[in-house]
Amino acid sequence: MDSVWTKTLNQVKTWARINSPWAIHFNSGSCNGCDIEILATLTPRYDVERFGIKLQGSPRHADVLICTGPVTRQAKNRLLRIYEQMPDPKFVIAVGSCGLSGGAFQGCYNITGNINEVIPVDVYVPGCPPRPEAIIYGVAQLLAKLQAPAPAVKEG
Ligand code: SF4
Image (tube, rainbow, N blue to C red; front, side, top):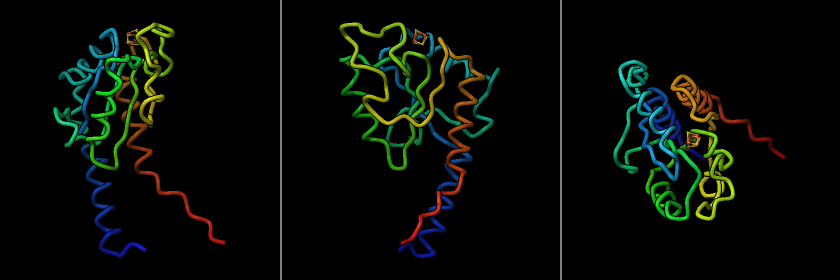
């Protein structure tokens, strides 16, 4: 059973994470269309930093992995390595139709599959490519999910 101290510390960590999620971006095989939209999301026009969202270079400092594209055979191990290097709790947002289903690259010889076949995905942002507003909405959905109280555990 968690002590009051541990519970309070976890609440503070969740509060900090919700108010300033740090994200890392990885292209696991996208055509770059989705990546350009992610970059546009970071520009002053959309300015996600005003929500505390900050792009990180190192997976060791990131809470959220924003991944684009299907997963190519070449990128599979790199994607796994990045995911494993992120500290717990970690979250994944799959951006673009290719990340959801393989999209335009479905069935290609060099494709392993969609992102969820390699690492667990928390939020999907559909579109080819999705607009920056949709990407911001996806991040907001993830933050809302984090804010929701954990479901009560039934006893007996
Ligand atoms: S969803 Fe569209 S824009 Fe994004 S990687 Fe696939 S083909 Fe490219």
